[in-house]
Length: 56
Image (cartoon, rainbow, N blue to C red):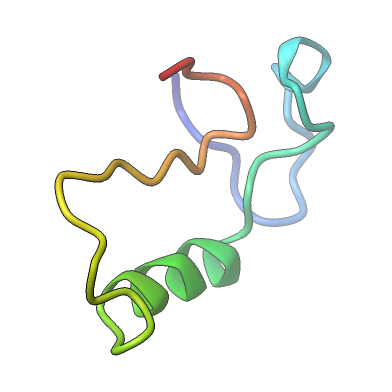
């Protein structure tokens, strides 16, 4: 599965739980959150940013 470029239609959107995949900014925000002081008790945690393409 190859992620589409920003503003490119997603050919897999119809099978996702969300109608689109996350943007680069949304992925960056999740990474910043995980590395921040707001997430000190998150341990052994997966952050699924696939829009439902991968079930955890």
